[in-house]
Length: 545
Image (cartoon, rainbow, N blue to C red; front, side, top):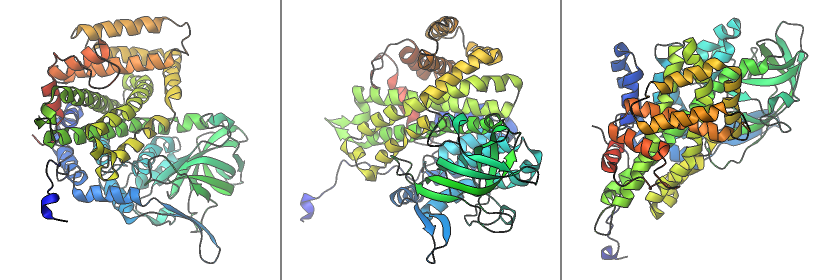
């Protein structure tokens, strides 16, 4: 082909070779806000190193390779012996190893650990989201295990280690381990109380044999799992090691890997237990109460993970429109495109600010902050994860046909976007958990109202939204059928309060006008034209300042 007919012009350079952390003003400001001053310099160095790695062409290649070569199940070896192993592309191990070494499974034992880890998780997830699943469960297993001090002493140092060892060996022979989780079963799904997996006690204290089938078991290559089973005293939580202390494999028959919409790099499986050895965690009959702190921590990761997908989507959209020309000028200068980009940027910043506020509440570890989390986490998980999919879809559209092809990585973001809304309880579960907190824990509502009340008087639209929310809270008629509406309103009011207090005026003004004042259409890109949209877009542009 003649070179004159194949001259490439008006194409956008790839968005790589940049610091994902430093280029995100909403995130860097949140870290500074919630980090003790004496830790800030160290945290910035850590997050900067992780941000540059996440923004590198190498990490982007690893992400493409891990998703282009999904895990493969090997049930037997060549001789017919059952091995139940999952093989991953080397890129998966590189991504996971880098994440573990960066401390993304270690939040509970270091100062400001949750803010540091949440910021790192938000940064590194933008390189590839699938391997975030084992990172999240490993991190979240710690509070569940702390109900048994002996188990915590044995496993917590391994769970929070910065050493990644992929080989299956007894945990005592490893410098670091990963954990998975198995709660749901075919007949019950979210209704874990209907689980049929049986746990038969052995003579040794706290030891059981499990028999049953788990319909979803995440990260089956892990070293250990927290699972629920019916013991004589009722539904109970158990720690199931993949390899027994004597080096033999525990009975853990992987029946198949799930063929999923997205999250292709990560293995999700169905597993069979048949006389599988496990140790009890917590008392018999208190399985849900024991594992609930793990669920709450993974729900927060759903918020952080969705914020990461949103941030990467808006970064790609703004970057594209900065370089792409059409109709006589670059797209970012076109008023209608600027409106779309500003709307996307608002959604992204609101998600980031909320995610880091929740992480800071974990670090504070006071009774008021714990009460706040009991209602704010399900409300945030409901709303932020629900907004992720339409937001990523709109960002993809900003790239036009270029965004619809796999090489752009935007389709991978879009396929990943619904996951966090489903994982750890879908929308109805979160909305009902908000109601449960309202009805059973008055301190949770008080803590929530104190938080949003800190911005009262600063914006009339926020004040009106708080008043409307209180009116709705006072009306118990048909409350269950209104649970989604209530969770959405509470999340929006909380986001509005945080932005009014901490974001630049142009961001807070645009959010309150559109999300609280109702001055917008049903689609993205319908913000009031009188707002300072150029400043909102420029703030979100992925460049270091």
